[in-house]
Length: 381
Image (cartoon, rainbow, N blue to C red; front, side, top):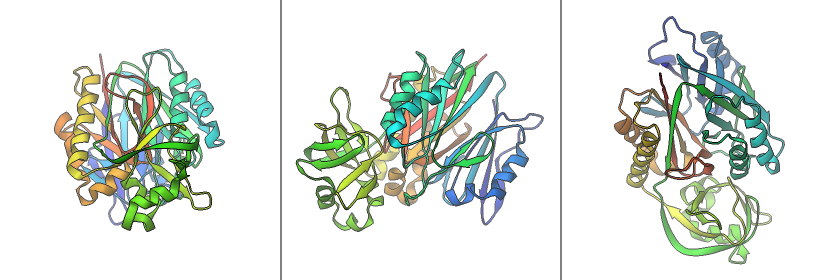
């Protein structure tokens, strides 16, 4: 596996971060960038001219992750030349949030199953029901095949997210998958680093990923009562106070982040399902806890790589973590590099939701919020 990485900023244009792949034509280019930049036809054309034979996988973000840095208002491209493995892509339009399970199934069903090792999934970030999406993905995955990825972001605006599919085409309401085949080993890990506080509440009225009542009170009214000075910054400020939700049948709580609010009926829309009867508590964190969480996620991914040295690391972290860490956000990227080594190429983005296995030792694909999710790639002989 050979890697080339380039960075675009409006002030400096294109810069090389990891030197070019000489005498090789990359089969894949991962592209993560600010929404206004990646929807600019000129920038997309420049990428296409640089890598005419490669497929593209990418999305809009809430921040771009590169080799040792985090940027805003930029585009990061990571070109990959596979020496011993192959890839296949699939794309599907998402009709509605209610069709997320069926869309996840249909996306995976497009991929050839023989020798499939791992699936990278990128999804639009606002309309999808992430937990239903991952349930559909898991239902269609062959036994032993893992999946990871994330939901596109839009800084902290929550206005529109963009997915870039196979031939450099911007699409809003879509799902994109890349299947990895043959001689490649993939290790995934995910961890949060948030603390639970306050009393436990019961979700007394909800439907799918929309909560209407908590403890028989209007959900948004009750949630606002906790926010204090942050109440006027909703929905973005909700990223600072996600919910820890204990769902019946789950061994561990899941973290859920608000995507939007409805003042008319006092409801809150989350990235994933929260069934009636679930128990919930508020969460908060600090920089040290989140950085340590990134280190734990990386250690888990390395364990799942079965002792191999990674050749590429894909990081998908939640925009909520970025808002908490502020100017120290690069610390969690440095924590990843401390574990895997600073010579391993890193790319990724800040998201509205992360896709990875549910917990340590699990291959079950699940939606996460407020986590750092690591996917490590290594070609094998």
